[in-house]
Length: 441
Image 1 (tube, helix red, strand yellow):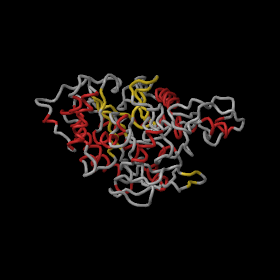
Image 2 (tube, rainbow, N blue to C red):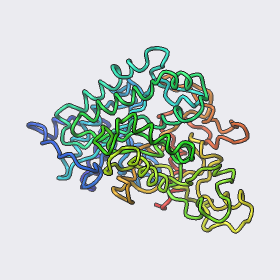
Image 3 (cartoon, rainbow, N blue to C red):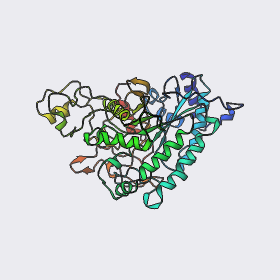
Image 4 (tube, rainbow, N blue to C red):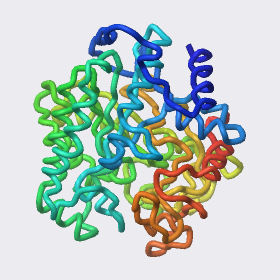
């Protein structure tokens, strides 16, 4: 199937158009797939032909161009599509065509990312809606409903559609209000209201699998946040006593850079690792140990034992020449941690176009206990934001954390220079991700 799919994708790149489904399929839509516990198991995965073309055009990109990546719907305009962004139907139509190349069902990952005052902890919020302007109601009517109506089209009933819902909303609810937007979000209950509507509306579609975002170890792994986050997610999803809820699982490290596994240190070592500047009191230092422990806490909060976790490993590799190869022997705790950790960021809170990052573990189903999948939800090589103070082509405003010269307190942003606006292709970053991939390509 992989060879035939690659041939089809290459033909599409040469033609530079999306072939209509009718040109390949005739008759009625394929029979619906039976709902399963894990939508990644025994399934092919959707390869975004537009990302495929961008990756293939880069030196060395052919090594990963056929990997499945997520389709991001981070504005209302992206639902129908724009001149530079194919719409949801275009991706689903192409997924139906790719599905026709094999007998196994095909899984496609879409990302909902347009909450009112989304990413409220950041200096800039580029979403379509705000709490002050009827955001929750508009989010439902103008964003969630149109997406749900498209997903419910019988033409797509054989696809397994994984919906990753609202990356990294939890910091806006768990942390002290860092901005006036966060204050409004927390006072209004806008996030829980919007999320509850989205997961319920999407899960009502039989072939849609809802994975609610659960942030990352750097935020939720802290003792003060761990239990509160699980209980909050249970409240949003209406999970009680292991009864069915409209959430099939949870996604962590979406569009993040957290190391999947830190092989050379952890918080149970003899040194007071948790007191180091890097760990800063956290109970976890990597995404896998956090995801597995948080899953158990979610079950204790009321979710059924069948829930699974998806970890975004698209940019968590941290290979290359600066990757440590052994545990430090230093007796200074800060030096010990800094010499042992593979995650080379200045802070676990740094999120924009991080220098030194690499491609992480390749997408895989059931790679570890309690983990439904490792997935490349954020397409590698797609910029997190502009490094200069220039608005993007869609009116996106730059965030200071994307400026390589910016220092928050005493911590540099760690961002790469010369980055384009969020959502645009960033070739130099892609090249660095290839060079620093871990496991190596």
